[in-house]
Amino acid sequence: MTATEGNTVPDTSDLIDVDSLLSESELELRRTVRAFVDAEIKPHIAGWYDNAEFPVGIIPRLAELGLLGMHLTGYGCPGRSAVEYGIAALELEAGDSGLRTFVSVQGSLAMTAIHRHGSEEQKQEWLPRMAAGTAIGCFGLTEPTAGSDPGSMTTFARREGDDWVINGTKRWIGLASIADVAVIWAMTDDGIRGFLVPTDTAGFTATVIAQKLSMRASIQCEIELAEVRLPGSAMLPKAKGLRGPFECLNEARYGIIWGAMGAARDSYLAALEYSQERLQFGKPLAGYQLTQEKLVNMALEINKGTLLALQLGRLKDAGKLQPHQISIGKLNNCREAIQIAREARAMLGGNGVTLDYSPLRHANNLESVRTYEGTDEVHTLVIGNHITGIPAFR
Image 1 (cartoon, one colour):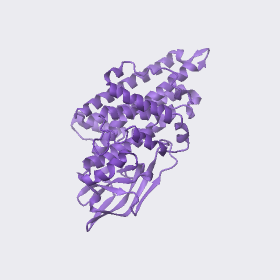
Image 2: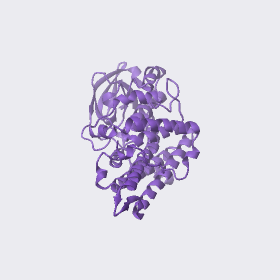
Image 3: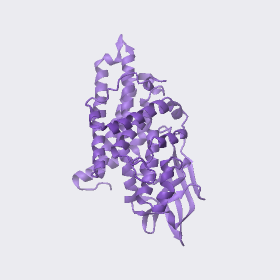
Image 4: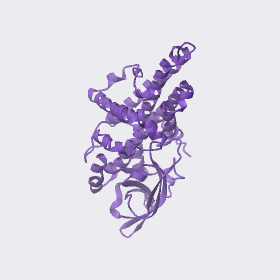
């Protein structure tokens, strides 16, 4: 057990009693997910990360805890609030970003696409099994040359009689190699449409992207679609154009706003504990002014970021959350979380570059989190467009 896994120091990250803003059911959910992460994730995550292994064995436990598609209603989904989903995302990412990413890809992307844009038959076929963790989904939007500009995708679906035939390549697709169904977005003669592709369909190939320096306890893949033939019923009937995938992306971005603060909090607590135990020049590191300044700055940003996430969650539950507000949350919280993780690593000195401590693992993971579901630059321009009324993307 490493220093950060023992929870031997009090959690002083809540300096302004944010807990008082949470209901008892929200606090109980947090206790449950935090206990799961402390008992079943933190003792093993260093090994999983080192071995580049996603622990598929935890999927049934995530389902038992009601964390798969937890913000969706009906079809066996838990039907929890946006704030509850956010709290769960925060606690999961305190364990590892890859863990929260699994829940996000399954629930916020794949399941949301089916729940929001699918036919009744598609919902009945997939959602109950996905909520139970017995079927896994992935979300194929990004391409090798179409990341921040998905409108330039080259994956194409052509109509042949009653069938659709898809050709193209998707990249950085989470869970694709273990998925049972892929939500694939493709250009058609009628614009961008979504399709449900069972992964055992002829012509579908998912290849794991290896030798990553980030998100090592997670699965990202490249998908090749070579003459993948599907029945007409495979199309998501309610999604047309980029609005369909963007609605799903906003669900995932919302979870990141909370999750990033989990990685930040865990990094802060690791640095705090280390600074209280490590003696230098005759006293603990925590007794030096520069150390206390670093800890204070970390705690301040965690408090501000958590308040921001909570405000956006309340707006989302009230049906008032706007896209530019999601961009504010993702831009700010990812930017601050990665700085906290880096500062925490520096406070650990040479020991901080080992997997005995969590901050550098979190910092490496946050490089990916900061990039996917919209880079800093993209979210800056979304906010800038809202402020000025002038789109500056091109």
